[in-house]
Length: 143
Image (tube, rainbow, N blue to C red; front, top):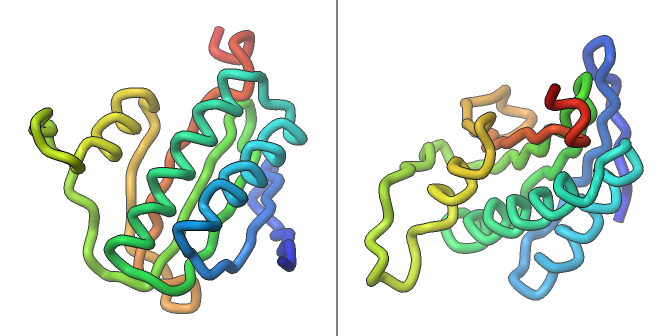
């Protein structure tokens, strides 16, 4: 596991990993992302949200893309921004879930918990798209 520290925009500190996503490794990566948010000053709420969001985004890479992706965790001002870059050009579709179905709730729940959530196409050397979410590092920073 090689950590790739990136030079971000002014006021941004970023840690990133190029990883092969396998279901058995998702717990490990959500733990690494959560530890990184804590290192960046995140409180328990930020850590919990990071764990949930990373689980969902990496599970979607496993299910819909397979193979490698790039996971990055950044501090941008008073927020943690978590990004997952993958090679699929297909953008996510967030719909109100059918609560009787076995799957299809994850991105909707993440969007409901994170007012800052989205996706975008990216430069080819990073993949085809980036799905991201952001949360306040601490409750105090929300004020």
